[in-house]
Image (tube, rainbow, N blue to C red; front, side, top):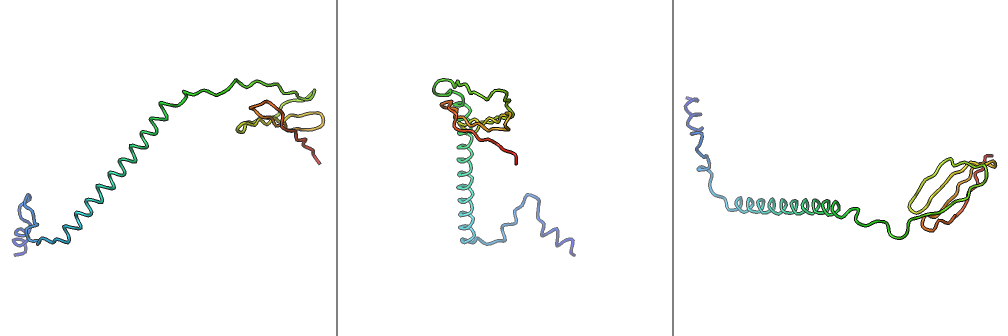
Length: 126
């Protein structure tokens, strides 16, 4: 008896079982709100994705067109006699050079825009 009951409940594979469920207007309204929420969310996500792709394409097309403004930098820095450069680094528009002299190490700071020496720090071992 259970097998005939299961067969009767199952119905045919293509048949819908929604015939037994009554129409609920509150459920339909909630489904409409959910559908609207999904469409708005997906639209916002799509617009955001297009904006990011547009920004990447814009940067790729417009990168490298503008060269550095102004004349090329050229300067000479005088180092003490017998000194040797140990290290150098650039940070923004500043150049820091560390030199080894007979009196110890010195750190020289230069402005890359003007080429002027901004200062010297004598490193002393104690």
